[in-house]
Image 1: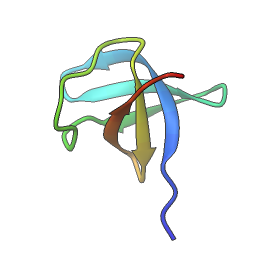
Image 2 (image 1 turned 60 degrees about the vertical axis):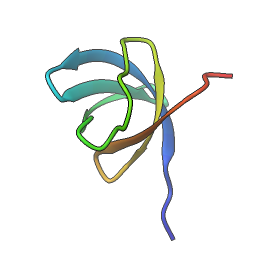
Image 3 (image 1 turned 180 degrees about the vertical axis):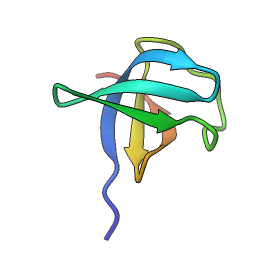
Image 4 (image 1 turned 120 degrees about the horizontal axis):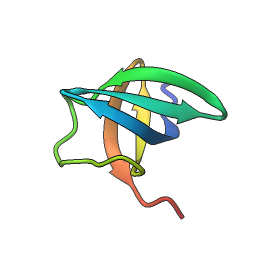
Length: 57
């Protein structure tokens, strides 16, 4: 079973991002995202990779 976690992008550096995951900050890769993201966007994250941009609501 795979579990993707919704996370907010705090900072972007090249193809890496610092995200907030339930109050913890982690670094993830943006290389698999099909669309551009910005600071403040929300993404689904699994195994260290952001997979999809999502609506924050």
